[in-house]
Length: 72
Image (cartoon, rainbow, N blue to C red; front, side):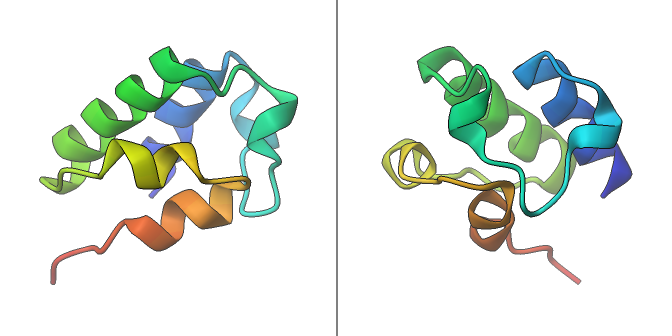
Protein backbone atom coordinates (compact mmCIF):
# COMPACT_ATOMS: atom_id res chain seq x y z
CA UNK A 1 0.00 0.00 0.00
CA UNK A 2 2.98 2.31 0.54
CA UNK A 3 3.65 2.28 -3.20
CA UNK A 4 0.07 3.49 -3.75
CA UNK A 5 0.49 6.26 -1.17
CA UNK A 6 3.76 7.34 -2.81
CA UNK A 7 2.02 7.43 -6.19
CA UNK A 8 -0.84 9.47 -4.78
CA UNK A 9 1.65 11.90 -3.27
CA UNK A 10 3.17 12.39 -6.72
CA UNK A 11 -0.26 12.86 -8.28
CA UNK A 12 -1.36 15.39 -5.66
CA UNK A 13 2.08 17.02 -5.62
CA UNK A 14 2.51 16.73 -1.85
CA UNK A 15 4.87 14.95 0.54
CA UNK A 16 4.15 11.24 0.96
CA UNK A 17 4.00 11.63 4.74
CA UNK A 18 0.83 13.73 4.33
CA UNK A 19 -1.03 10.87 2.63
CA UNK A 20 -3.44 9.04 4.91
CA UNK A 21 -7.11 8.08 5.12
CA UNK A 22 -8.15 11.45 6.56
CA UNK A 23 -6.52 13.49 3.77
CA UNK A 24 -9.06 15.89 2.27
CA UNK A 25 -8.54 15.65 -1.49
CA UNK A 26 -10.13 19.05 -2.11
CA UNK A 27 -7.25 20.71 -0.28
CA UNK A 28 -4.87 19.59 -3.02
CA UNK A 29 -4.78 19.20 -6.81
CA UNK A 30 -7.75 16.79 -7.00
CA UNK A 31 -8.83 17.57 -10.56
CA UNK A 32 -9.62 15.62 -13.72
CA UNK A 33 -5.92 14.99 -14.41
CA UNK A 34 -5.43 13.64 -10.87
CA UNK A 35 -8.46 11.39 -11.28
CA UNK A 36 -7.16 9.96 -14.56
CA UNK A 37 -3.72 9.50 -13.01
CA UNK A 38 -5.26 7.72 -10.01
CA UNK A 39 -7.18 5.37 -12.31
CA UNK A 40 -3.91 4.52 -14.07
CA UNK A 41 -2.06 4.07 -10.77
CA UNK A 42 -4.69 1.69 -9.38
CA UNK A 43 -4.78 -0.24 -12.65
CA UNK A 44 -0.99 -0.59 -12.59
CA UNK A 45 -0.67 -1.56 -8.93
CA UNK A 46 -3.87 -3.54 -8.31
CA UNK A 47 -4.96 -4.60 -11.81
CA UNK A 48 -8.32 -2.96 -11.20
CA UNK A 49 -10.10 -0.30 -13.26
CA UNK A 50 -11.86 2.30 -11.12
CA UNK A 51 -14.95 4.15 -12.30
CA UNK A 52 -14.01 7.77 -13.02
CA UNK A 53 -17.36 9.17 -11.87
CA UNK A 54 -17.17 7.31 -8.57
CA UNK A 55 -13.60 8.48 -8.09
CA UNK A 56 -14.60 12.08 -8.80
CA UNK A 57 -17.09 11.87 -5.91
CA UNK A 58 -14.37 10.96 -3.42
CA UNK A 59 -13.73 13.59 -0.74
CA UNK A 60 -11.04 11.89 1.33
CA UNK A 61 -8.31 9.35 0.72
CA UNK A 62 -10.44 6.88 2.71
CA UNK A 63 -13.12 7.23 0.01
CA UNK A 64 -10.55 6.34 -2.66
CA UNK A 65 -9.31 3.38 -0.63
CA UNK A 66 -12.89 2.12 -0.26
CA UNK A 67 -13.15 1.87 -4.05
CA UNK A 68 -10.10 -0.37 -4.29
CA UNK A 69 -10.66 -4.05 -3.69
CA UNK A 70 -7.38 -5.84 -3.26
CA UNK A 71 -7.55 -9.29 -4.79
CA UNK A 72 -6.20 -12.04 -2.59
